[in-house]
Length: 123
Image (tube, rainbow, N blue to C red; front, side, top):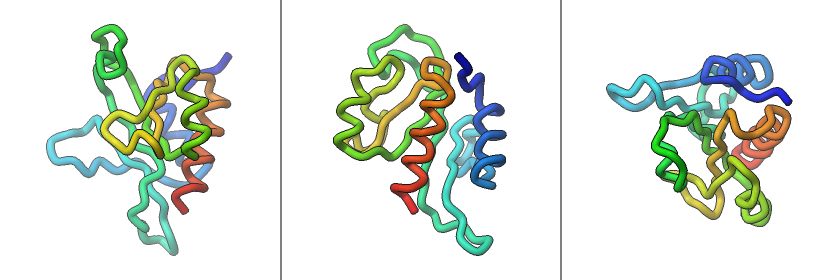
C-alpha cells in the first residue's frame, strides 16, 4: 500500500496534479508549507492544504515529529473520518471543517481523494 513518504513527495504530487507549488508564508519557518488556489496566474489566497511537522502529542500519540497535512472536509465526512487511523480533528484550525492527516499513516490514494475534496471545497 503506497503512502506519501515526506514533504517532497507531497510537493511533487501537488505540482503534477494541481500545478501548485508550496509557499512558506511564516517568517523563520521553512517547514510549514501552504498550498493554495491560483486564478489566471495569481494566487486567490484560499488554502486547500497546509503541511506541518508537529509532535504526535498534539493527537495523543508518541512524542515524535510527524508529517501532517490539514485539509478542508465536509463536516459530516470529517466526523466519520475521525474514526480512521491517522486522521484527526484539525490541529490549529476549525475542527468542524478541517481534518489533520498523518501522511505516512494513511494510504496515498485516500490522501489524494481527501486533497481533491479540499481542493473542491475551497474553490
